[in-house]
Length: 238
Length: 317
Ligand SMILES: Nc1ncnc2c1ncn2[C@@H]1O[C@H](COP(=O)(O)OP(=O)(O)O)[C@@H](O)[C@H]1O
Ligand SMILES: [Mg+2]
Image 1 (cartoon, helix red, strand yellow):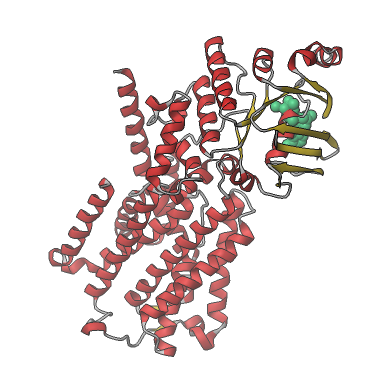
Image 2 (cartoon, chains in turn green, blue; image 1 turned 60 degrees about the vertical axis):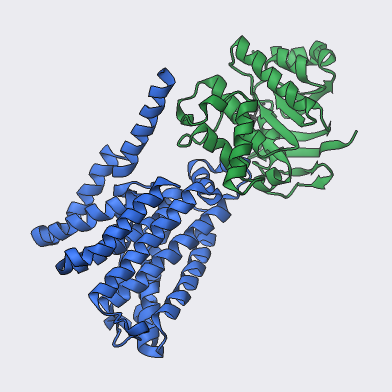
């Protein structure tokens, strides 16, 4: 299977703090990588490093074989990365359709085509009937789905999801798990940070566990979760 | 067809008839139209892209000086001078944006004040070209198709065409890719980047378009005044007035800057005659009131209210 995302020796430093220390990963096309670890482990920072939102101290990143290490975030999106933010960031002054339209314009410069694409994505995440609602007034579950829709509208090949499930009630969680599974079935490659173990176990093909900026272990979801080092890392947090 | 195009067509028709109805009030109408155009052009950068400039007098002055110096020193026809001014304005905006878009929030705004200051100093010190501190007169202009460019009526129609062109540009922009890129960058640059948008490029384009359109109005202004002084045209007050016009009317809205022009120029006429020196004080009060009670401006605030109410109603039913 071809490698969709390959990162070597990713290191990020904030002042004196090494937030991500020499992390490597290799994600096969159409698979889901789960990234877990206690709060402050460096998951979001690793995400930001892979997507270009924080500068690297060291490391290399390749997207479908293309070296994207020195590309700006927007250029990485153009090259095929899509991402959500841990705290959703809708354009609050715009409607749901317009929010997604902004992203859809990347691949479809003509308004009519971009609008078709945006509506299609809104349908995919179940927000089509609300397309002309201002994004300001959405509840959490819908904000998450809008965040997902925005990331999908750039038609990524590798999708980064940062804690999409946190705080969702059981039906909304089930629904979100369904969306992600469907996306992977369409050959999209997914990297997801998640605290909800149910989602990690159900969705991930491979799991990486981080603590204090390091990878402490990785493997199949069931194996990893029973690993004593992982249990210590999580319990040590409290 | 978009209803904004219809409104604009209606207004242009009214504008064409206006000189017949009020032939004695052309000068104030010209000022109003120029401010409507400048504020609309300013708003592409200040409202749509969210980068507040207090240096747009630079572009007015650039357009004005190209026309005036071109006519008085080199015998260049004003349309060619304006064409050159548009290029110069775009280049100036590009260079200035490159230097300053790294600055965030108020620092960008403060840096724009310097643009007009620098140009004013150039205009004063390079007297061989610009006439120096005393300024430059436009003595004669060509008469295309027998048209007297100095005539008030001609000035008026030029100003009308200018205002209509800027509004037309913004209406078209508001629906297309560029308009959405601007709004995205204004709201959240990180989120815009996640949508594949390069914020710097988008802001540069907005600055260049905004500056070039403003310079176009500046060229018309120079013909209207037929005399340019560096102190008057590269003056912070003019930059502030342009920005205020858009802010009071409603940043990032299609009609806000025009409504602002109606208010600012209209009340300006009243204030100038009634309050004389207290003019600036009144401007200050006006902007404070708007910012405190209508942060989205006179057009922006109700527009937003109506959109949200319409949606809430439909969501209930
Ligand atoms: N912009 C930043 N500046 C300084 N320190 C940061 C910044 N972002 C994150 N950190 C630090 O880096 C570490 C990892 O944080 P983060 O990546 O958010 O962890 P996680 O997502 O796993 O909870 C934390 O110690 C955090 O305080
Ligand atoms: Mg995090």
